[in-house]
Length: 513
Ligand code: AHR
Image 1 (cartoon, rainbow, N blue to C red):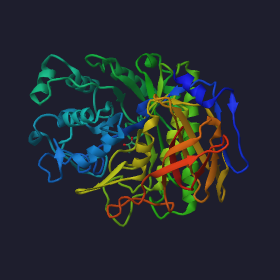
Image 2: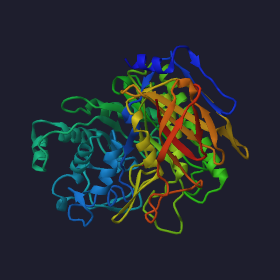
Image 3: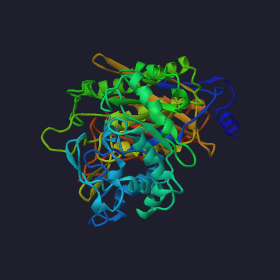
Image 4: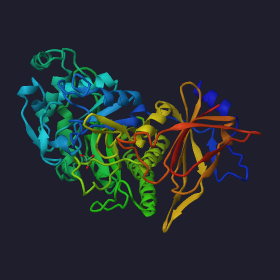
């Protein structure tokens, strides 16, 4: 059905294009190529205990003056609900390897006060624990992705946690009921350890593979088993995944492996570059560094092929990605709190387009992170809340969730600054369940408007919204929360041509008719 509609809209032929002289970018559609479903989980989120996430940003407690439902602030919840968040990863990140789940159950007043030794020594009240997370995910309608503690935990602690969450009967189920929840929850995804090559324990790949296999052998849930995800490589060490996968038992104990890829404007962890007020050189290097995502995924794909892991049985889970910049030295922000600008929005669009293109192997991604941390959707300050430009991209891209990604070739003009040259235009197109073609166009140029020829789809109208920044670091503030927001966009074709005018520093999402 979907293919028939696609073929009808795209018209027959393997490679279709028609470029009037004016257009600088051209889209070609491989109408006969197979499509791949864009897993909704590609739009997943990450909730780690860092800075003011969850405390203050999501969880304020029932007695707070900030309007809340069972302790979760209503403004943030409603904004996340509007995104249709498909899955949330919790409790870390590096924090996961110091988290002991039994600290976070039972009456709140009796929970121990700990110190978040991973992220700035802030108080960890344990008020947001297992019940709060699973209830939050349930209300959001999101799947759950649990990251269990390998670094300072035990296989027994992990197994007990899964029993507590999912058992129908027995003492742990009774304890859960005593703590307020009779019905078991579901753990949809499970990761054992995090960044095991780094903060998660500095294990060699061989040692981690043994430990993973031990934990996974006992990580059972009542009912449907979760998708088990090995903690894998980052962009600088692809071979870590390769070595893990050489373990004799591991592929029988896992359904996928993770990958972490952050975008640092300068590429230097010691001086990453500021969130705002940066020079064009850092806009350009940010775009270049973001586009590496395609190569990093290609490396992982090659490793899967080498290990004969078929894409329909073993997936890639990019469970941390996004912008990471320097914190403002003049203030004392909570850990990993950073402003998000139109640059972040463009980075989000470029990454999402790459994930769509690799949707046959990329099963889930989790942007880092959801509220008040790194490339957040939402920033809060006491009772105030502001949506970042990245939030708007996730909201505009919603039609791509579950749609069929079409196979495209893009001919793009270059964007060049000093010694950096990247394609200015990135495009993704997909066929939605309603049989519509949705098109996302990202203009990564800091300066140039581009005309994009979308005639190959055979449509006459493009209707949607565009997000653009007046400057390279245009962003929303608590005082001016709507400086960067999507505005309506409509283009009519003529004589069979459909040309989209796409301004610099922008993300456009349209439906073709
Ligand atoms: O997202 C912040 C941190 O980045 C995570 O805790 C860790 O896994 C990664 O290094």
